[in-house]
Structure formats: structure tokens, C-alpha cells
Image (cartoon, rainbow, N blue to C red):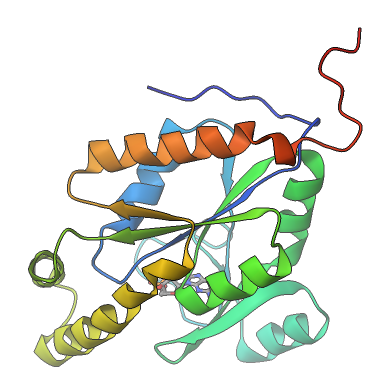
Length: 210
Ligand code: 5GP
């Protein structure tokens, strides 16, 4: 099922934030979400880490130097920023403001501290969605199966994931990602319902006006 929803200038655009502990299957989920849900753009983050194999500038991230990152933050061009594994990450502000203004929706795949900053800056327009694996054991298995970390790396991520998992209470929605198709259907339901909220319609919008 694909949700067909066109650019809706009569309402404000929505900033959907997806956060999860690493290993929760968040990447698969947002990639699928972008094809399953119409009219949803992805925010492209700035990062100071180098591109990994196959990552494309401007598509996966904007890859910049620390100096450039700092300059952009100082100029107020970022809506939030955070440090992660020794690198800086930030969300460009322009596309968010444009999305809200033009009634388009945008998806942010960012960490918990970034999500908090966005929700503080856009209290009316941001919707936080937290994704958790069904159990801690499940998360451990996913991390090992992925094979991208050595044992100390896995242990570090597990400790961190346990701490991060507690943050779900600060979000608007919680998805327990046991089965991807089901999680996508839940995500679609959230997006659709949020688009229909009466409070998102612009002041002066009169649906019955001929
Ligand atoms: P990765 O290096 O794997 O792309 O991302 C590492 C972590 O940084 C992930 O937890 C991801 O959610 C987070 N992240 C990616 N982009 C941003 C961003 O723009 N802002 C914040 N706060 N976190 C981000």
C-alpha cells in the first residue's frame, strides 16, 4: 500500500524524526518508508566523517570539514547538531523551514539529542518516532549478524543501546520493530494521521468555501 498525498499548501509541513538505538533496524525502515509513503523527502545531514563505501555526496550526507561545519553552525544554518563517534552531524535548517512553510513533509534520521533540539525548535511541527527492537537479545543478535564491529565495538554499542532505549518516553510514537512490513504499515498510519490533524491546517483555511 502506498499513501498518496499531494503537496498540501493548506496545511503546515511536518518534520518526522526517526530515532533508534543502533541495531534496531532503523535504516531498513526509513529506506522502505521513503518508497512506501508518497511526498516524503529525506533530510540530508551534514557530517564531518568521511564517506563509507558507496555513499554519495548530497544523497547520503553532505561531507564537510570541521571548519566548514563550525562556520555553518555559527551562521545559524543548522537546526541541530550532535557529536557521534568522534564526528559532528547536523541538520540543515533551510529545507526544514521550507518544508513547514510549503506544506511538504520531511523525514529526519537523527540521534536522540538531535531529536530533542528539533522538537524544542519546532514544537508544533515535529513528530518524534522511536524504533526499538523486540528485545535486547534481538538487538545483540542483529549487531553481531551485521558483522561491522569487532567484539569491543559490539559491547560499546550494546551498553549505549541500553541507555538509549530508555529515551523512548520522550517521543510521540513507539514502533517495536519485530517485522518490517508491520512496522512500515505502522509508520504509514502515523504519517497519514498526522497529515490529517486539524491543528496543522493553516489559519484561515476554509474547506467549504466555494
Ligand atoms: P552514521 O555515521 O552511521 O551515518 O550515523 C551515526 C549516527 O548519527 C546515527 O545514530 C544517526 O542517527 C546519527 N545522525 C545522522 N545524521 C544526523 C544529524 O544530522 N544529526 C544528528 N543529531 N544525528 C545524526
